[in-house]
Image (cartoon, rainbow, N blue to C red; front, side, top):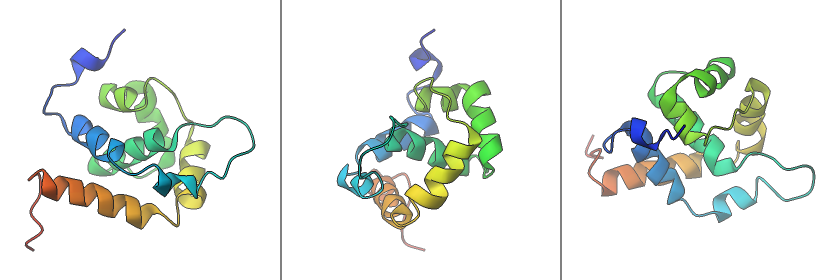
Length: 120
């Protein structure tokens, strides 16, 4: 089942997807020095978390549930299903030191594309 056609071209999930894809990969390199088993791509996890925040979903368990049940979340996750522990570990340990950089980059994209105004 292709979810691409179920997400309108102007949907917020597409905006989050584009904004995170434009972030420099080096932002994530520090959080993933290598070694260990394969993990979920940090950009995918970032997209899911940022989109969750736009939907006022903050609980890792609720985000994990949304990835299983909500089409925009499924699309952002590429049909992968990170569990709540993975999501929580990602945002609280792996990305803790770079979250400000990530959010600044996303906000800059939104301002550049005229989705938001930084006047206030």
